Amino acid sequence: MNRRELLQAGALLGGAVLGQVSTALAQESDGSVEFPPGFLWGSATVAYQVEGACREDGRGPSIWDTFSHAPGKTRNGDTGDVACDSYHRWREDIALLKQLGLKSYRFSIAWPRIQPTGRGSANQAGLDYYSRLTDGLLEAGIRPLATLYHWDLPQALEDDGGWPNRETAERFTDYSRLVAQALSDRIGDWVLFNEPKTFTQMGYLQGVHAPGRKDPLAFLRATHAVNLAQGQAFRTLKEIKPTLLVGSAFDVSPMLPATVSAEDQAAAVTADALLNLWHLQPALMGDCPAGVLLADRQEDILGFRPGDEAILRAPFDFVGLNYYTGFRVSRVPRGSGIPGADVRAEGAIVPGAPRGKTDIGWVIYPGGLHEILLRMHQVTGDIPIEITENGCAYNTRPDQDGRIRDDARIAYLRSHLKELHRAIKDGVPVRAYHLWSLLDNFEWAEGFAQRFGIVFVDFEQGQKRMFKDSGHWYAQVAATNRIS
Ligand code: FCB
Image (cartoon, rainbow, N blue to C red):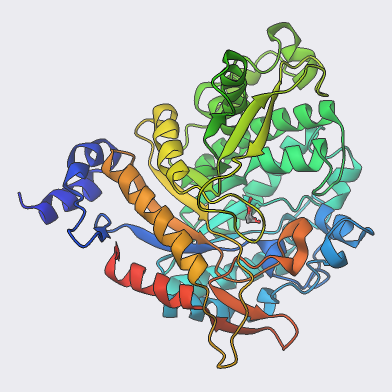
C-alpha cells in the first residue's frame, strides 16, 4: 500500500486503525502537514451568541436574556437581543460557509424557542426555524452538527430551581425528545451539552455567567443533574432513531502543576478530575472521578441516589472536545468554598508562556492541544473525537483599504492545527475540526468586546459580514486538507 492508500484505509476503518496508519501522516520537508482524507473541516456558532430575534416567533426568555439585561453583568451592558441577526440572515451565513468550502457546521438549538417555558408541547415556529436552517445546510452540502444545550436555559426553569434541581434533567429529556422527533430525519449528529463544566461553574459557583449564582452546593448539584440529563437524553435520542450519532462537547485543558511540589502535583490531578473528567467519566463509566468529593459525602452533596449510576451512562458515539488554553494548578488552602469536597486546586492560566496571550487574555499554548488529546484518548479509547471548538479572540478591524489583516489569528490557528495533526499522527482518532467561530458574535460576559470570528461582523453598519485574512487562509486549509 502506498501512503495515500494507507491513509484511506485509516479513514474507512476508523479510530482503531487510525493509530496504526497514522505514522504515515508525513510532515513534508517544507514543514507542511497533510490531514487524513475525509477529515471534516467546519466552523461553529451558538444560538444566543448569533441569532438575536429574542422575542420573535414565540421564543421565551432564557437565563441569558435575564442576566445580560441585569445591570453590570456584561461588558458595556451588551445583550444578545440582536447579536448577528442570524435568525434572519441564516441564508447569508450558509453562503459564507459554502464560500469557505466547509463541510460541517456546528450550531445550537435554543431551548426557549422550542419550549418557551421549558415544558409542554413544542412551539412549531421554533422548530420551523431549525428545520429551514438544516435544509439550507444540506442543500449546500454541509453536515449539520446540532448542539441541544448551549447555555440558554428557559428562565421559567431557573425560577423552579435551575440545574441544581434534579427535575431539570427530566425537562431536558422532554425537550431533547421534541427536537429529535422533528429533526432526526435530517440531522444525524448531535451534541447533547456544550461545556457542562463551564456553565455549571461560571453560572452557579462563580456567578459570572447566567444565572449568576454563587453557591458551591448548587454548583455541585447542578453538575449531577446535568450528568443525569446527559444519560437520559442520550437514550431518548437512540430510542427515536438508533442510528443517530450522539456525543457531548467538553472543554478540556492540560493541568500543569505550578511547581514540582507533591502538593501541586496532587492538585493538578484533582483539577484534571474536576475540570476535564467530571462530565465525561459518568457518561462512559457511570461514576464520578475519585479524589474530588470526600467519598462519604457524595450522596448528600450531589444528591446522588441509588440507581443513578445506570442513569448517568451515555456510551457516546463520538466525543467533542473544545480547546483554548492550558492551566497552571497550585494547591490553595482548604476551606476554599466547596463543602464536603476535597477541592484544593485552582486553575490559573499558565503565566509567562512564551507565545503571549490573545486579546481576551487567554494564554496561547498550542502544545497543550497535543497534550490534552493524548490525555483524553486514554479515557475515550477508540471513540472518535471531534474538535468542536478551537479559536482565538483578536479584535483586528478593517484597514483603510477594507482588508482585515488578522495575522495573529492565522498564527494561532496554524500552530494549533499542527499540534492537532501531531496528535492524529500519534494515534488519537480525531475526525473533525470546528473553528470557533464563523462570525464575530456576542461573547457572553464580554459582550461584543471580543471578536473570535474569521468573518468580521460590523455591528454598527447593518450587520455587514466580511471575510478576514484568516477566513481566506482557512478556506485554503479546507480546500487542500493541509497546513503549509
Ligand atoms: C467557549 C464557548 C463558546 C465561546 C468560546 C469562546 O467556552 O463554548 O460559546 O464563547 O468559549
